[in-house]
Amino acid sequence: MHAVVVTQPGGPEVLTYCEVDKPVVKPGWSLIKVRGFGINHSEVFTREGLSPTVHFPRILGIEVVGEIADSTLPEQLPVGQTVLSFMGEMGRDYDGSYAEYVLLPNDQIYPVQTTLTWAELAAIPETGYTAYGALLGLRLQAHDQLLIRGGTSGVGVTATKLAHAMAADVTVTSTTRRVGKSDQLKAVGVDEVLVGGEDPLPETAHFDKILDLIGPKTVKDSLQHLKPNGIVSSTGELGGQWNLEDFEPIAAIPNNCYLTSFYSGDVDRQVLQALLDLIATKKVDMAPTQVFSLPEVAAAHRQIESTHGFGKLVVVI
Image 1 (tube, rainbow, N blue to C red):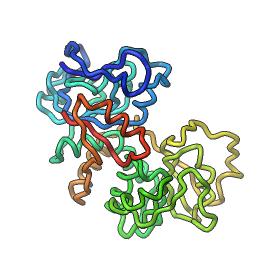
Image 2 (cartoon, rainbow, N blue to C red):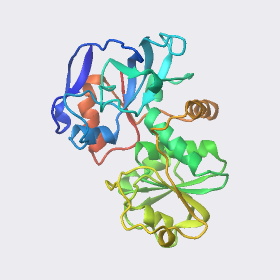
Image 3 (cartoon, rainbow, N blue to C red):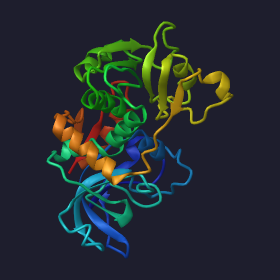
Image 4 (cartoon, helix red, strand yellow):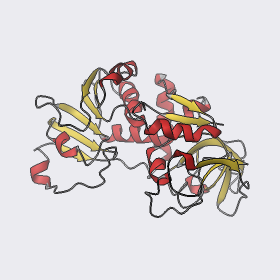
């Protein structure tokens, strides 16, 4: 089969399109014919050698959409069944989705019912589930004023679309570091744009709910811009900071306000199908920003790393 292999850490040029052996099923694992996958920032970090547990050579890719090609659990995962998978240790401890076929543990494969195209479905697994789960955790309600910090990211764009589908008359404000992306944000449903990114929010700006995708770098500032009974979800680390430092909860969290998060590695199959049903019922536009082919994975990495990046990039085979 064809795959994109990394033999040593480095820039996008280390992503090598080549022929490798097609995986063979083993007990407890099934083979997926890859139809598509999204490109994720965590895969860039792994490619650069910043994931210390990952050893090369490795086929990257932490998410996949496709069809069962060979199954060791035919009752639940029959050949031809449409499936999704993401997270776990795929693309890290064992080879991932940057290939024509991927071998995965059965308990990490999620059968779904959907009429979405492969490109639309490829935009969903890690990104859509994260956005949806975080919005559920924010307890989004009608007429809420929602702020998304890091709104031009794949999760940010998807959260904007889902928020309008989940609650009536929600007002979505999004941050961006570049004023030139304001029109793109408004085109996907953002009502107001704040230019600044990781900068402190304007002193007078307050929101019912804040989805902070910048993460620990900005979450203390986000907490100070909540309305009474407001919630911050720190779900993401786009700011490049992994931990909250010098965080004293009594001082940092205002009275009657709340801090939560969402981890996409804990996958609830019913929530995943509910997301797909919401997309179908509300006719949410899940078209990715750009679609690449398997030989173009290096180009997709260059795009996600560029200042021109916006929304979700996917590969379709």
